Image 1: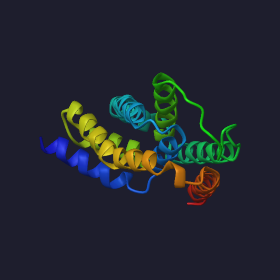
Image 2: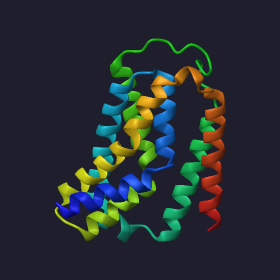
Image 3: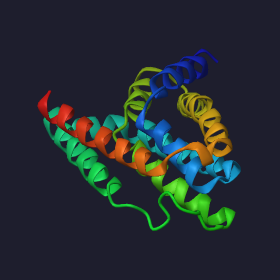
Length: 185
């Protein structure tokens, strides 16, 4: 149980203020359906962190730190530029969508945003250092939920007061700044 606790605390703390927490807020404000968003976060995190734990040691042997740095920087730059493209419903009325559509959008967006993220890297490191693997994956997933579920519920509740255009531009600036920071270090 020590592995579960260490993994939970490490990822919950690492997730505070992270880009996936911002994504949780944006999804909540846009769709206003917290249950399918939270389920999407759960499934995406389980899949992503299971993959990270399972493949972490193999990937670390294949990619040099320099290669990984440029892949992550390019990904952040692409996400930042893509974020600048406004949605058709930006700052307007969000059309009613079924729970399955919101779940799918959340699952895909969250899984992709988690790629190369510090919590995914933490999962790789924790899986290399602690066992059993299921406790690492369960702990990192619980940590993600502890950090993101309150954001989703609060974001859904206060969506009318959140300027989506400003959030979109802020997110784009954040991703581009992260890309530049990663490339320069």
